[in-house]
Every structure is written in C-alpha cells, then in structure tokens.
Image 1 (cartoon, helix red, strand yellow):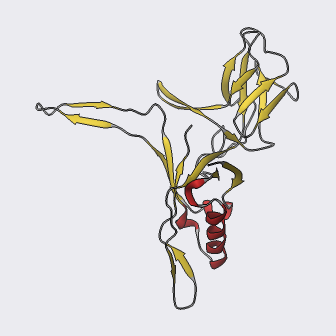
Image 2 (cartoon, helix red, strand yellow):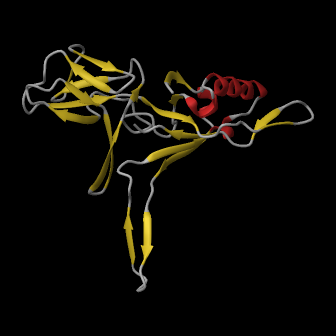
Image 3 (cartoon, one colour):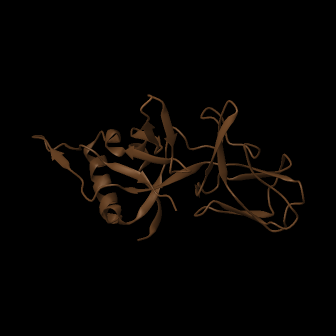
Length: 208
C-alpha cells in the first residue's frame, strides 16, 4: 500500500460529482424526540468520476490510471473543482486566507488547515495535499517570500526560525484530496460503435 503523488486527469474530474459526507447516529425515543451523535470528528469525501467521461480516449485514460494504481491498493490526488482553494472559488489565494497557528518562539512546524464557517459555528479541515507552487505564507499579515518550506506530501509548513510569541501565521494555497478507488473493478460497457462508458467510478477520501 502506497500513495502515488499523481493527480487523476483534470478533464475528467471536472465533470464528476461528489462531496463531503458525515456519519450521524440518530436514535428516536419513545416520546418522538431524537438523540443525535457522530463517531466521526472529521468529514470524509466521496466522488463518482464516471460523470466526467465524454470520449473514448478519456475512458482509456481512466482504465490505465486504474491499472497503474492496482485498483484500490494505492492512493492518488484528486482535484475537487468545487473546493480546491483556501479562498472563495471566485478569488485568488492570498497569504492571509487561513490562520494555521500562532507562534510561541519555539515551534517551527505548522499544519495547513482550511476553516469552514457558518454563523457562529466552524469546522477546521486538515489539508494534507497542497499543490506545488501555490502555497503562500504570512506572519502577522506580512507575506514571507522565504524562510519557510512547504511539504506538498503532508501539508506541513516548516520555518527556518520559529515565529515569535503571539505572531499569527497564515497561509493561502490550492490543494488536492487524497483518495483511492472504492471498488476492485471497473464495469465498462461498449456499444455497437465501440464507444465505451463506465456506469460508476467510485472514489473515497483517504483519512490517516
């Protein structure tokens, strides 16, 4: 089992469907009231790539990609076109988009995160697969062109010198979702003109 740092073809993922899921246990009491709880602290994303296939060549590309990953055995990158930036879809990532930590004069490593805010509630999502060349960093709102590095395989930002106590560390970036195929088979259908289709190509986010 390994993770291949390669992205699923963008021209196919752009037409796919899917998004986050949660697992919620709901118990209905005799009174009709409900008790709800969730064993998951984090959401998990599922996608179906079959909706993005429009040509026979794309079908061939998916089959080759599936075989090269040995089906569900190895993970890979996936671009979620509905959610792949640290900012709003219409905006360009900036170094002040997301707060990823506060300096204490000793800590040199920070994890990339993205906050989802609605009203007074929010959810912080760990970003493990930033896109190379897109990460921007600022300290107390001042962009930093150097003095740090980004590990695009883990989403860890490492500073050469620890940010001072109370200094707010922010980041902007694009990112991929680590996924794997969620089936051991591809069900390919060929019509009379030898044009093919696949009923479903399920993908599931890898959490670790």
